[in-house]
Picture 1 (cartoon, rainbow, N blue to C red):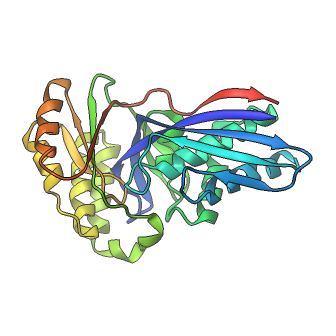
Picture 2: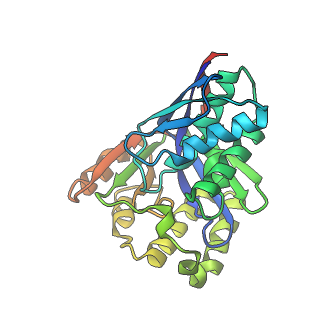
Length: 286
């Protein structure tokens, strides 16, 4: 029994770590999960490109338990998404692994079921503070969402024009979510609430820039990378997730100037676009 699925990365509009309320949208960087199940085995083994496979192993186990299946197998992930820089690689991995397992079993799940199982696995694996419902929903659905993560509720959907460019500056460093504590954000909660209000009212670009400034301060990052992008024409720019990556949204004609100013710094620059696809099953052999 084999299944394969992929899911996209997402970037932050409002980080939910301070308040439990967030916003995010999907971008065209993808992670693919391949699952092979064997009813004659009992152990699930993960291969995650050198990263800890615990999350995707838990995703497979939770789907098997939900479907009443007892079997073992292998789950492998192949990713374009940089890990531990704020691009929701864990949410993409969870979505893809859950979908691939359902595909291997010949079961078509509801989107809500995929989200719930992935979030449960993420909490158990220790890769999220809030459940990352905003990131997971944006990654699964391939659109923008404004959410209440604590209630696991989508408050609003939005879209970034597909013609826009999404530029991502990825510094050499990484920051795993397990190293971030909720106490770091006590002093900025009111400001994050305002960013979330802006997102709910439709000011997505303003909310993204404000959020980036707030969390850069809370986490000790310089906001200069984002400010450099804005000075070169970015419509919005700011820290994504808990960083250290910074994301800018621009018109196509301004992307080159932003890239040029970022090239003065040490790091990787990715140019992509908003996603309108989200997660999808790519193979199913039950």
